[in-house]
Image (cartoon, rainbow, N blue to C red; front, side):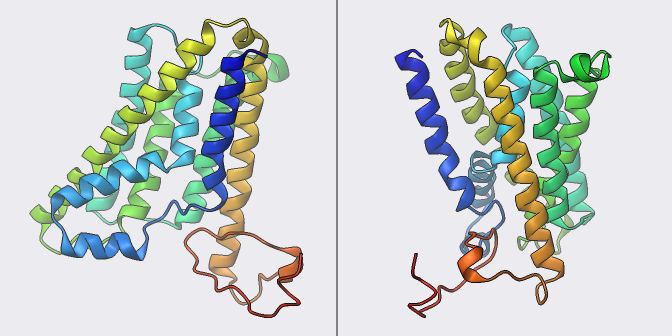
Length: 261
């Protein structure tokens, strides 16, 4: 394995560490900043939310993984962007929502789907052509936008329709800024990797890793959903279940017998 690939793998592992510790939701600190700040705060939050939205970033990585022409990149990124803008704005403005754990679980499926498609899964396992990629990216864009909307609706958007719309659009602008920043890094890393012999050798493994990440995210979201709806009954012994829960503030026990490794 080349030195570049080793560094790329190390970078990916480093970036993946916050998956177990970072909440993809809206924190109390974010809510307070929204109350105290102006529209620029919504832009900033949208950008930071996209850059820490690992499900969105992994799906985008899958979409652009094998794209080499600028025209194709612009086409598919635009289709995805239009899709998530529609549901982000419309669902938030009209307060259409659902349990965000379940929405994010379905978004995780989109990550699995793209890795499976990239590895020729439909041809190998179902003896059929892949579904139309433009249509699928647009459909998943709608889904991802709905996921963003469920989180944005946790913020104080106000009761004035005009002010609320500007706040939604400000958040959306931030999302697009964050997406562009992430894409620049992804496309740059992929372009460099393609220049090495290891790309052809390891691209299949990389997409298997994408599938595995999607499976992990799927079970993490379903696990969170169980805690959300069955908070009193869905429990595990502490010594058998050490998990950093998204959107949950869990107080560490001071009992030394429970903190012993």
